[in-house]
Image (cartoon, rainbow, N blue to C red):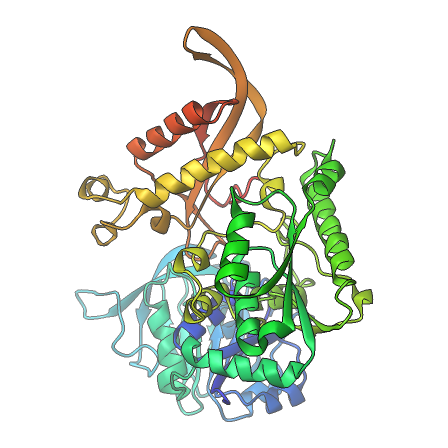
Length: 544
């Protein structure tokens, strides 16, 4: 099925992916590509509309990115966001100035925008109305430069006190631009604005639906693979699990999964993977017990980046060794998802900073001489989860909290020892089970820990990610009449909509107290439990 689609040209913003997610949530297919793709690519893409993202550069400098001229010549709608608005203005004859040159303040964070002109993009939308009947929007800004003069044919669409041109529109050509970021949740009407653009202005329908995608994907895999055999590295995570279920749906016994058990998974997770795939779904799974190999390689290593590399390298070697035994296989399947594709393509983004290497284990070697099968490479994580449910995988597995590729290796600070792994597995299991079995109540809502709509939901569902961390310290304790000197674990639970920023979860004290008591009483070797109340930023969600 050929989907109606939107092309997003990326100028290096840290939140470009959120634009795509909002468009996909509107059930419209879209793709992100660098701003400097060829005109032939744009012409052949077949977009119903184009969105120009934000970015870290300034259009006032001569060597900074610009949109291909073809974008404004194709006769299709264009939406510019932040830097996208500025380059649209500059390229079409307007004027952009830095805040310093214009004598204006820069805007970062919350702002209130007034709508003007009753444009097709904003008409009828507002967060509140002033006494003068002006429609107002609560938005998120992040800019130093501003449009100071409109290009010919444009009219004012929005303004703030410090940014007189915060939105502009050429309704004849269906060109729209906003200085604020509609893709972030802080812009309350952002989702409605983007839906208005893709549905009403671009004329896209709602043909991007996971239930329909299953049949499309199955047909594609069958056509691609034919009668060949396929191998897949099954980690137990959501991406590889959904990929395995989808490929098995398409080609059955032509698929063989290799499950490398490195001993750094959650409690009993290896057995659960085998039960779900081998026993329930009938997938051929080879389980490789490589715990001793991984532990020996990690001995004496404390640096987190070095641990990641060791785990990734050992995984590749074990997988490669097992794969060589499957001589008939011609395809290597991977659970690559769309954010991985975007991240790989955008490693050299101007202004981007590497925080740490990716949690997932590294790619497999090129000398395996296998063709690559990546059936999820068009999908975001939330779409992968939807697909998993559509394929019949258990919802509780599909909607599990994220888990790093190196597993508990990066949740044990310092050297990874088998004893530490066992302690952490049990502590983490207690924490997760208590979150799953405890529901939010009216008292929690009254205390501001959750909303009234959250009453009755489990605290596991109300947190975005929760886990325990083994700390490289010991503390003095008292048990019975004796002194103890044992290990410490930290509990981490966060709430986030996009994992780019996060708030620590305001869990009920009773829940935290129960978790602490259970861990200390049930896990011999731990005598202290602490709770991490750091946000992202300045902290990261994971500790390593």
